[in-house]
Image 1 (spheres, helix red, strand yellow):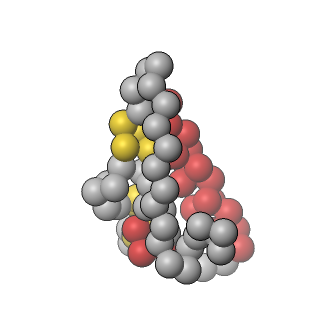
Image 2 (tube, one colour):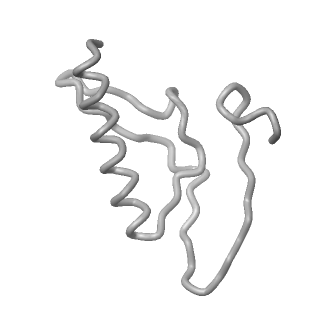
Length: 74
């Protein structure tokens, strides 16, 4: 993947996360294994099994750690 393609892929994923977050949905398990590329290079976010739907007025703290993709302090 070229740097230009990588930037385009990142932008598409950022747009997807923005849309999900606007709808109150948090994926909670983002890592390279949960992103596939279509033949045309478009990224697809998969595996919403850990996703959480935020509820207005309710605050919940959940920690999901995926080894190799989380900061050491977690």
